[in-house]
Amino acid sequence: MANLKEIRNRITSIGSTMQITSAMKMVSAAKLKKAQDAITAMRPYSSKLTELLQNLSATLDSDAGGVYSTQRAVSKVLLVVVTSNRGLCGGFNSSITKQTIKTVQEKYSDAEVGLFIIGKKGGDLLSKQFNIAETRNDIYDDLTFDNVAEIAEKLMSLYAEGTFDKIEIIYNQFKNAATQLTQVEQFLPIKPIDGGEVAAVNSDYIFEPSKIEIVEALIPKSLKTQLYKSLRDSFASEHGARMTAMHKATDNATDLRDDLLLTYNKARQAAITNEILEIVGGAEALNN
Image (cartoon, rainbow, N blue to C red; front, side, top):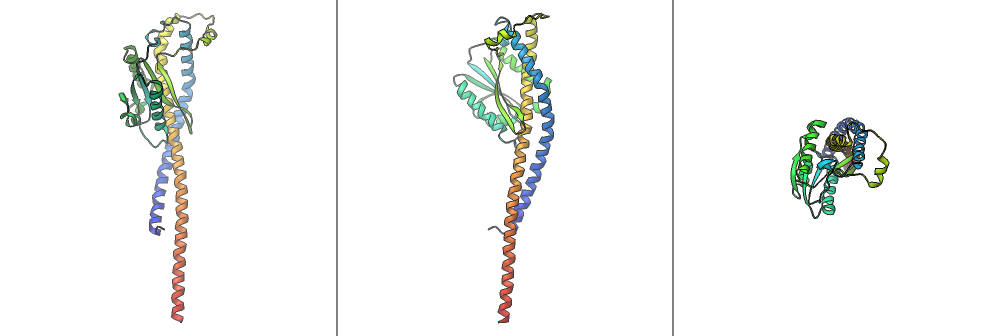
């Protein structure tokens, strides 16, 4: 059994760890509230915009949506992998890494795959296995629509120029603080709605300006909004995952500290008992 000094040092060390993890939990909880409000407010707008664009595109000729709607034979694929810049957030980054590897192996084993990584951790985990087209670690410093729009425009240019035939986004979708859902979304080309849904959206509307002009104006905005929503989802998921991880770490540290306190008290009690026995034994020896 470790001596009393070693146990005291371990208790002190665990107490310091508890303070750090508890503070990180509170910081993540405060950031999560703001991030959660932002993604919750944005989802209805993003979903409706995507729905409107798909509905309009479904009523037009296949080439009316322009270059961003053109379906090509897939030989070169770009995966936009959204991770975090910092760790200590449980399985947040590892789940994205595993999904990226799974997507490449199961869907694009015969294609040339490049990665556009957002977040430092993704680059650290995947750079040795895949071709990294570009890494952006600065976006979380100021996560605004305008900054994300620059990235979206670059992705749109890569597709329009034929550098890649397909672009998908892999990210964590925020459900609640304890649950994040790993998603793989098609970014380009624009995914058409099922044929069975087209009839449901053909209504007697008058469009001003024309449908084609509306679609051409909506496509860039919709794509930028889709990417921004994905990053917002990931940002909220990161703080939720970190808050949950730090909460569990604090609980585990508390349990370990309690066990050590119990061990310390037992060892101290045994030491006191031995001292009493030695004193009693010494007194009896003097009397004899």
